[in-house]
Length: 342
Image 1 (cartoon, rainbow, N blue to C red):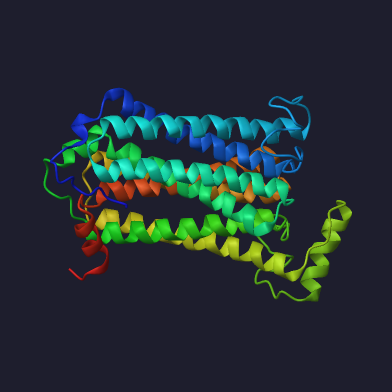
Image 2 (cartoon, rainbow, N blue to C red):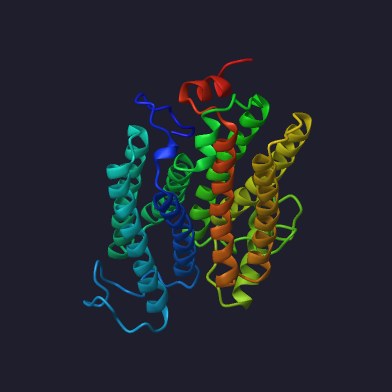
């Protein structure tokens, strides 16, 4: 569910206690930090620093040294977020009268439980690529759910229930397209990270020494010579293609973001919250592109790479927030806005 469906009981966000609203936002930001912590595990190669699960070396608190710090630290942050979501779900069940919001809370709880299971499977089965990628993508999806919950409880949404619909059909459509592209890009990024393709193309702005990569033996030799000098394992063409597709995806996102700005100017957006969100989105897209470049040029510095992962999630989150602020509150009206001609 992207935009809120009005509750048949007439209950609105005005019934949401201030503490619940703040707690939902805390859950959002905690999830974003969890994504950063997960990024640090992968970036430091610490995914198997703790070989057992659910315990860590048979204990709850192993010595926090080396890769154990990142892996067990990630587990502790994940446990904290899981506890927050459990409390949020119970709180929603007690205080929230809108059934669809309560269901979102249950969905968030189910997602975080399944996410924990996937995390355990990545360890027990020695980081299989499909499970690791699913673990990364579910984290982004769970983050989106927390944002929708927080917005559904907000005073902003409550006020919109007593205002006419905003309109801006064209802007809503281009924002949904951008959101879909970013989500696909995050999947590609997860695939790139968990197939060791992050430096499969080690140069920028060229790719393997070419402006237009031919994906031939000459290009692969150029790349593997560079990697050999740095004592890195050789890569194959498949890894090079995955990396290249991720770069092309970034280009598509940048172009779509520019188109979104053009549509916003054409439609003369005056709502201050929407304008601020668009500016925030622009800043994140530019920052994310720069972080992507720095990830390559720094030869995958763990902090830069993990910040790149977290900023990607934040960019998706801001796009979702923009959709929520633009879209009609009725799910059916939202669908007609997207799929039906004006």
